[in-house]
Image (cartoon, rainbow, N blue to C red; front, side, top):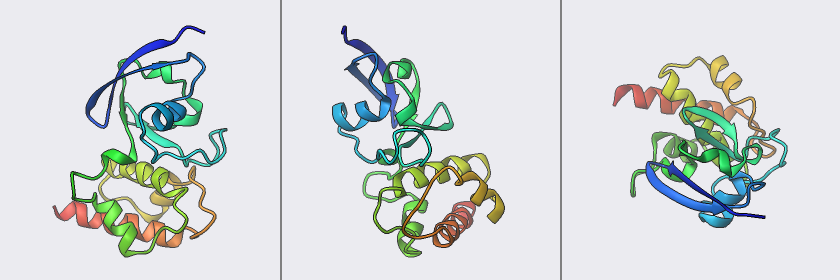
Length: 158
């Protein structure tokens, strides 16, 4: 199989890679680019553990062919922190103990970031609806929702 050359932007950095035309974006992120934040939880787009932001929309990287990244802007959980400074969502997840095993956490953080970029004052119902595509088997969702709501409040005051 002939490898494809893809030029894209990941977390604001110009990025180029070679991929098999059948390779998923999740596989390229993890295996070729060493961006291991996105996790493979199901491989069918049902759990949200591999969530990334593509052109402003949350998608499952396990369902996207890497070749489709050509010319696209992609954001992953690795791009949330600014050098040594955690994103407010990351801080609030720690403060609220809104994580346990860590499989779902990167996808939930990415989805929550996308939500707060669309609305800076979401209701609890909006947060729950927005995160509905992300499954967590450890924490339940109350701490996660509280962390997102608290981060939204903090971000509004910045």
